[in-house]
Length: 382
Image 1: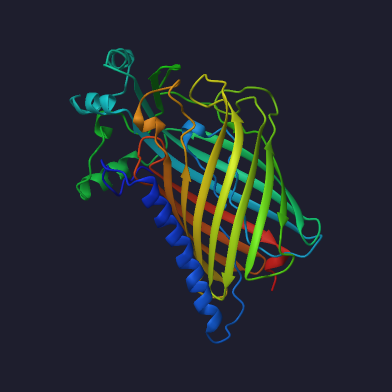
Image 2: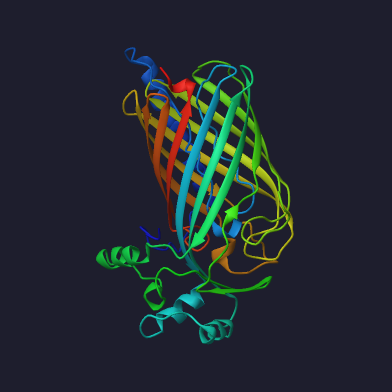
């Protein structure tokens, strides 16, 4: 839901500084783990791994997004089921649309006159105002000591949502910029694209939800049993079930590979993940280009107790847009998101609550998102 906790940054750090900071983040987790190794013996602290949430960015939502690798040790032949509910609010626009909205007197339902005025603005223009709810159901099967498979089935619902009033109140209470929100009727779907390769308008619209394309994955764990270090390799494919469907499927098959380095010790765990997805098509533009989209995730997990864990992770991925689509920096910039989650184990179930906030670039990612997760498996019955 659209809470922009930090102001816009005009001077982004260099790539070298970003890499150094992220490397330091991972090394900090490893150092903490090493320190724990040298301490007194402690009870067993189960680790669950990175938050299993996927990117909910509307601009690249329909492509395959590799779900971060879990860190659960299960015996061969075991089964597990995972249910994730994700919800996000997006209020994103180009600078000229923001200025146009701020110039309007009072609140209104956007209409044809506003579309014409936005299209007449100098340069490219866009507005994406919607909320998105996602349900993922994943079935896991451990085949052997090193091998496992999983299948994910998903459904999505698009709506105007219910959070606009609370978001505006939050911004006002803390003196944050309104970003033009008070000019538009609350809790409606408004999508206006006037880009190089897209001319799309959905005003006060109802977008059809439904089933997304299923994803099937194969996982290989280098370690066959609990170990201080592990490397997890995964391959996944997203299979179209009924061709191209607006806001539900690009109609193309996507494939992806992911490698996750995991470090465990006592209460601590550190994670470093890199993925690459070969994807075709987009949800909001008509491009049918095939490209390789990388994603990097850096995470740290701390066992507060034997049943409660805290996870923090940082997500980095280039935008799926290219200059042939648009020249607007807000859509071309790299996506950065921070997630913080709390997990609690009850018998054979693990419950998760997490929150995701975009940082640095605000016009190509959800302003804020939430996730509630439930996992059941015999591996937790201990």
